[in-house]
Image (cartoon, rainbow over all chains, first blue to last red; front, side, top):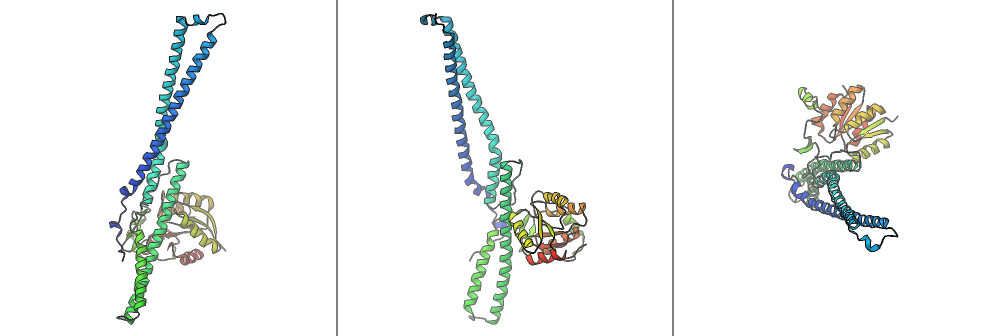
Length: 253
Length: 117
């Protein structure tokens, strides 16, 4: 028979639960880093091609029909073209390194909000519904944060509803069992007694689903759903100063 | 005649459930908000006949939002729908000037309260 445990003994182990998701973050970063390297080398290669083409074109432009091809190899012209070529190569190398650095810095900036959302989603998956995702930007990441918060809120509603209804059902079953045991002690109606015990067990198992969850501003205490903080600021303090007149479903000031 | 109602709850699933309950009973949903801040803004723009207000919400909770709405319009009709224990929190809500406080799951009581408000 499943035991219904109080919530403080079943707090979700978020660190262990989210550890599974860390590996995926590294994979994404590695993929992005490789993409950056490939991109940078592509740019470098392109710069090299351009530099070679540019220097060749320059050489072609400098050649005149009257000039003896052999004389092109004169020291001044050849030396100048080599310097030009080297300059282009260095320029290409610097462009490649600069693009690598810029892409790395920008990728970190791009990944940071996604990383934060990943962590928030992992917490929701691990039963931590009490930490909403921050909606910093009005873009795709902001929309994603809103959706994560909505999923957490919906999950909270379902679990609290489950906890509430199963609690009520268990009370009904207990009353039925007491009534039957009173009227039919010993082995009377054994089959019905066994069925009731079975249903009660199912209810307790369902109710236990809510025990390992950290809810948003709500906790399960002594069989009741209570607020975890002073919701509304002064409302609690104001209420405590006044004598309770009992809860009512109607009644306006 | 049906009332024009603003539904406030941070859970989209809960908003749909409440809307379905109210629409099937002949009321009109003129807006929905997922936190107290949106609720206050929508109230000022839409002027609903009645507001159903959750209490525990992100950004701004229902109690704070109700205070702001009642400060803006002391004739506002607000019904708190919450998971919190009625015995403990019901009187707090009424002290603020709300019409009533009902557990979210009690659909019959919700409708009775709305119809009598």
